Image (tube, rainbow, N blue to C red; front, top):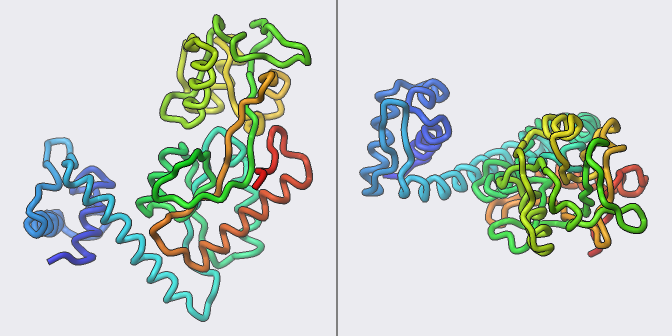
Length: 311
């Protein structure tokens, strides 16, 4: 028989990658956990996990079941939270993802401060991560909403486009750039330069690679770094040039930024929620707060390289 306990036990094992870690989190004995997972496998007539000396490995059937189980568990958690908050609107936990290395990640502290003022009874859980990971987390119910890079189509995700941010070339003084009229740098001008880029797991890397492909060359990548601080340090030291959202640059790196031209390189940021999971009052409240904060930033004109999405 399939029940919520077996589902939650299975999810914990997959998330931890081991029976011992999952048992410790759940507060049950490892034999009890093993029996529950085995009963689940018998019910589904599929092997979901392979036990190894180093932990567990998820089978193809296990991965398929995990996606559905995660979504189901999230729906139940949302239902429990919504029912328990009746008569106490705006409470519970809400998880929000912020796309790393961009304008979204700069909103973390302002969002937390605004939450304390407007919704002190809601516990906000922030997740700074890659856009692809955030989309997957949205679809599987691991997070409730995300401010992430988007490009249609997004299966299983509802996207509300909020703003567009400009990507710029960041180069140390030791590397000379060929500039166009108006002091902008064309993508072809980067053909022979050493570049330090985000890894292919990042949404922005795909945008950069496509722009270079349209200019008929592959970037000469000397390093791939997914830490914004380490990436900027590598560029500042003269290792190479990079392409990043202007809004993500700290003041110390702003002088190293150069506009791309003649056409700008831009990406869209959207507020994303699941197309399948219900949206609770608390999730709606957080979404409205984030959208309102973004609108304030756009209106005051103090957000470099960011402009309003034209609906």
